[in-house]
Length: 388
Image 1 (cartoon, rainbow, N blue to C red):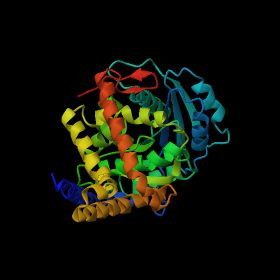
Image 2: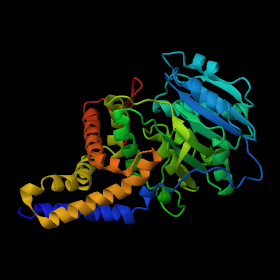
Image 3: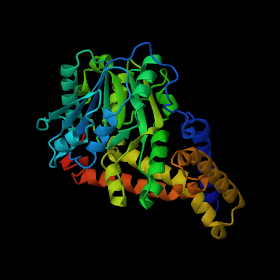
Image 4: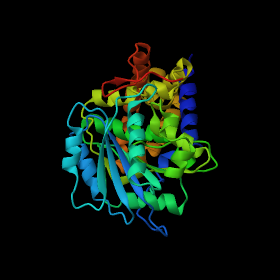
């Protein structure tokens, strides 16, 4: 027990060396959806599908941004009002820009069918309407009702898909990061997502890793038909990554970052971020107690041990422990730096990553607790039963 501090600190340093050198360089934030530099020979027809439930406050700005897309090809928008309790449909109509070259179609969603998660049920109805209004559409653009896109975003997505022959092109949009809890937890959320799904591995056709970000997913219609449509993933809670896995089995997927699309939603309180994470965290672990314990221990080892060893130096006075811990902490700062800069923060803010990791560890444990109490998968007044 006298030498437990050096052992733990060395193990943490070894983990950080692996994360820096052996996990696809995820931390570099190098996969970016840039402006169009190679235009396709033709611009295919696209229909955007916007599933919306109780989004009256935000959907107007979302659809206004879609109406202003500067896209050379034919473009239409389908908004699916998924049994909202507010006036989502009215806000959608009010937010539309009448000068748009695109057409807006609003679908009143049917009651949730058995065996489906709510968002996927709305997406499926949107796809059916999209095909009805434009049988020649080659791409479906799934985008959330709380996202606003710059006018050239659709150009960028289609150019990436067409010139590099991707079946799915998705971007993690820029999340709001203004309040205290957002500043602490949102850049960390993006960092952890990239660590879990290294974007360079996702974008490598020869690698099995597949993932997408549900806020913006442009999928080739032929690929969607190949996998059996949205119905093939009808009961998935983490629908974006499930879609990416299905598409990548026989196709190519690209996932990247962008500052041209941004979230309209505020997560002003810790409770709002907590609810977002606990909805799917235990599902991500396949409801496995072993994976839950492994996640708990690895988060402590990677993020909390270096800070703990440094702060308790006077108690153990192990020189090697301090050396390993400082090296691990510096490695953490290096890894977190590009993600902080993406959100306009200095790298010194990386000193707070252990605190953010502690919060996310607690959220993951609480996600398991909620599942065991029968309250897992709760979102917008719906509780979806787990699928294992």
